[in-house]
Image 1 (tube, rainbow, N blue to C red):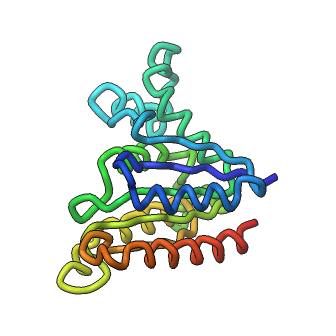
Image 2: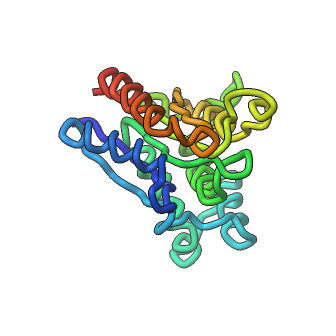
Image 3: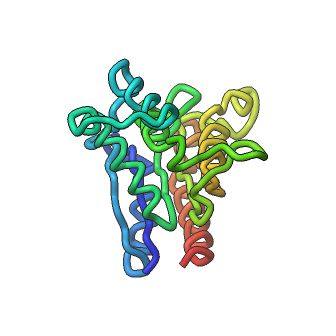
Length: 204
């Protein structure tokens, strides 16, 4: 059975993003082995002075770490391994202030590891997760699908680019304007569910 890694950042009560994610799980839980990581409860370690230098020395400098030093990197290494071990990734997150929540960015900082999920070749950088596919589920209160805010949607382009860097083709189901168009929110969720069904049928 194919494996699916689900990354959830949906802490808000009555989260519209969570409604989309819950439907994905309900629709596919019998078709795939799911690993659910709640990024609001299991946050990656930020790249601060100690762990950043250990990572650079290990992954770029080839340094052998002691067990104690390795333990400092253990949480982020575990998340990186979860990515390497999966066939599909579903990332569910709202847009916050034009971009992604800091915890979601921290997950990418944890798993984008030289020599593990990307490498350097004669032809440039190569993503090493080529057998994986990703789906992004995202909502926002305002409409970032049209101007004047379309140009400041930094969330979707970042996520697509970050996954691509890892060798993972990603597609996004965005439902923007959930507060701005509150009277249409249920319709938008219904449309998202149909889109999720289409992706699910392709994957499984």
